[in-house]
Amino acid sequence: MITVNIIGAGNVAYHLYRALSLSPEVKVLQVTARDQRKLEDFVNPELINTDFSKIKDCDVHLICVSDSAIAEIAKAMFGLNGLVVHTSGATSINLLHQLKRYGVFYPLQTFSKQRDVSFSEIPICIEAEQKNDLALLKILALKISNDVREITSAQRKTLHLSAIFVNNFTNHLLHLGNEIVKQNNLDFNILKPLLKETVMKLEDMPPFEAQTGPARRGDQITMKEHLAQLSEENQKKIYTELSESIQKTYGKEL
Image 1: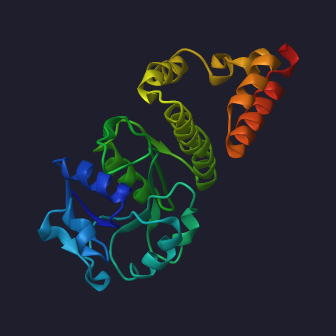
Image 2: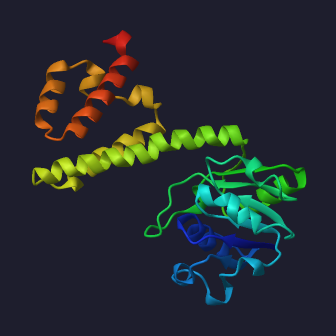
């Protein structure tokens, strides 16, 4: 049985708590956050803690807070027994170097409390200074995921940067697309089959080969018509810059 504490009350803390609580080989001892109200919605009341001086010893402490708060939270972990890890994609393992045992437990996924996820399919990137601690993290990760990888801080930062492009930026483009159809009294749902096929294509081909559209074809007439349809300067700027990037990528073929 692996004992775990979770520090945080956000999306990552929420989903890790749910996933770890379902494993018969993991016991969540405590969930700590300053605001008790944020924990009451999803944590067993007996496990809630708001006093950082009363964090219990356990096998693994999971720091699930914003990147800017990790260093401050780590100070409260001094003197505790157990392995202390953060769950950030963009933060080096070295931020925890003053602790006796430290590492990283990074689930590579976008999380929202309003939507359930299947943790078994989520890659978990682990890192630790000591071999025994790395082995412990691997055992813990395998309790909830079928995809566990030993990743360095430099590699993890690269993954996080790539994830910003494929997830965060993509989602913002979806928001802009939704705004465009709404402004013209159309339903965004009509685009969902297209979106699904865009993602499913990646099962059979790399993004480079999957690219279609007027910029890919070098269709200047259609692109000019699209720009004329757009009324907001921000949308025009994004459309132009992305189209130019696509044309540069496939320039030799146009």
